[in-house]
Length: 380
Image (cartoon, rainbow, N blue to C red):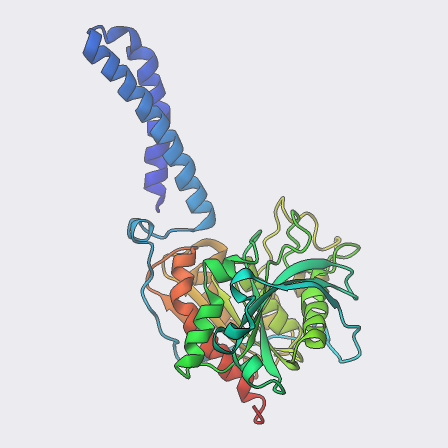
């Protein structure tokens, strides 16, 4: 919300306690003195709390302006004219990979009655155990009505990832992916897809940034190999027709999955994602001292130094976002893309790093994913 506001709050946070100290004994009138002291103490506390809140907002870019904070809404936006950019193949997928396993499957309470499945679909909670990575994480899988009305049909699937740390249900409760997909299908703006909703923090509290860490967790292999193979083995999904979507860290992971595993992930959507791994105290060492491992996890670097994968990306950001999630970084990434990779963009005129900014464009993104996933199979 601006550096001047931070400076003003810093000055207030320092000044008000000093005023309390020097004026305490000088406020002698019984009533006015008490009110003056109380007012200065409250002002000290409020300025300190506001300073912390603004610093957190500047760190996370949650709100881009005061209107975003108080309105909690974002304006609709359209997909711009396609640009073109470059990528690579990294984690190769082949049908020979060992399938992961699905355990502890049960429908959520609102979806337990089979009578609703043909109209509303079914939302299941389950656990995925990776045979290749040896990692395990909970997932929520949405099966659209077509899964039950056409019982012999296989459907494309979309892996939907939260930000860090995230909880899997936020995609249904806050971002409303299942209901958005159901409405897009009803209006014939999208075709049926299976949604696999997870958080990227598969080794929580550590944030692996969906990376195969040398000598450590193989998080990229978990999401690129184990999750799709487990879902394909348990549900009627198409092994080579996967998409990915996510916000913040999930957006970075979605773009990485498409660029490193194009034989499986054909399209990806990044909501306020970034394109260079953010290493901090939550990630620990991700590269094992290898410059090449670090470069291969930098999507900008891959675009400049690796062959382009035949995948499609949709990059969403807002003019109000700065830092690694922001508009300028997204534009730089888009400018690097070259054929056969393609990229579209949604640029919100305002908004921040919030659900209220992403939620209005989720229906449009699901339609975009549907078109790209179905276009690669004429039989669907």
